[in-house]
Length: 74
View 1 (cartoon, rainbow, N blue to C red):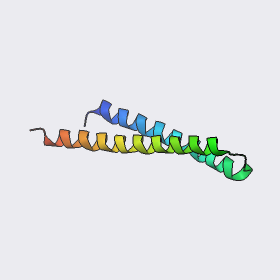
View 2 (tube, rainbow, N blue to C red):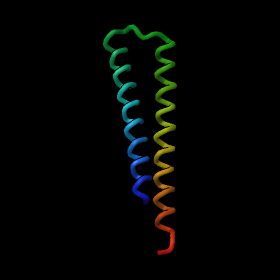
View 3 (tube, helix red, strand yellow):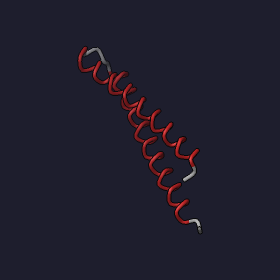
């Protein structure tokens, strides 16, 4: 795989991981303070759905890129 493509995947992985940390901190805050209402829970759910979509797309893109590189003739 091209070196720049590897760095792109790493950057996206870091961004998704950072978003996951934000969601985890928000959930922990909701459990510790009991101040989350229905809107907060729905926002967390939407964010988690978005993260799952991004993670799947990242995985699919990485697998697709690595299989394309392997199948090219040497």
